[in-house]
Amino acid sequence: MSPVIAIDGPGAAGKGVIARYLAERLGWRRLDSGALYRAVSLSLLRADLVHAGETRIAAQLARHPPELGSAPDGEAIYLDGEDVSAAIRSEEVGVAASVVAPLAAVRDFLLPTQRSFRKAPGLVAEGRDMASVVFPDALLGIYLTASPEERARRRHKQLKQKGINANMRDLIRDLSDRDQRDSARSLAPLKVVPHAVVLDTTKLDIRQTRRKAWRLVTKVCPEKAAR
Ligand code: DC
Image 1: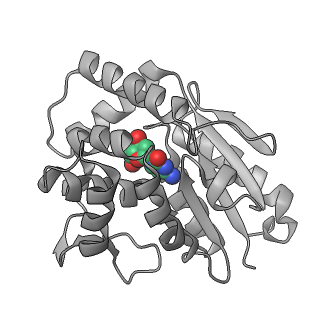
Image 2: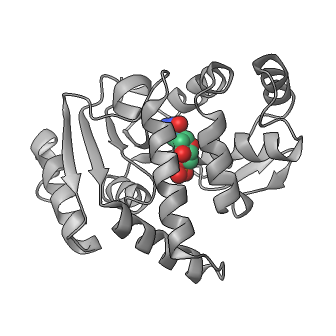
């Protein structure tokens, strides 16, 4: 089986940036599992099924599965042939994703898609349950986190760059509501598994975080240390 590096943690902790960096440096594939949950949530929002029963939700997902682009990192994501890569990034879709993510109908539906990303030479997978459920045999698990205020600040900056206006107070509230839902659910809750290394980035900039993450990788893949 190809090796997997699992990066888990709460929203806006910097998982995407670090996963992209490690995947690029290793020459491995990347999986943004949150994008799949967001695409499912967009599909359910559009069909007005976010609060429907699991049977109707399962039927909608079977009829309208999100599809990942052919790029090795699956960067683009499609719904019924429409590129929804930008549409899934809104806060509304992120909040709805954390509402539907606890459902077995959604998690069971996405499990095989996520595992299908595991191909040679390796995979860097980011999400909430990468080390606990999807890839429990990961070579390395990193739990990336930061304080809620710092994560809200980063998300604010990210949204501003995309021309989206957001209020800091609303962002802090949305992020902590999502943390609460992601951690409290009974199926695949967000948690630190015993074999994961916690990396708190509250006081670290991107370069420092990259350096620390790379050091963890070279501990498990010493042959990469020289690169
Ligand atoms: O990482 P993100 O903010 O794009 O994820 C959006 C939501 O999707 C998150 O609040 C919970 C859910 N999610 C999940 O339950 N499991 C994953 N592996 C990834 C995301």
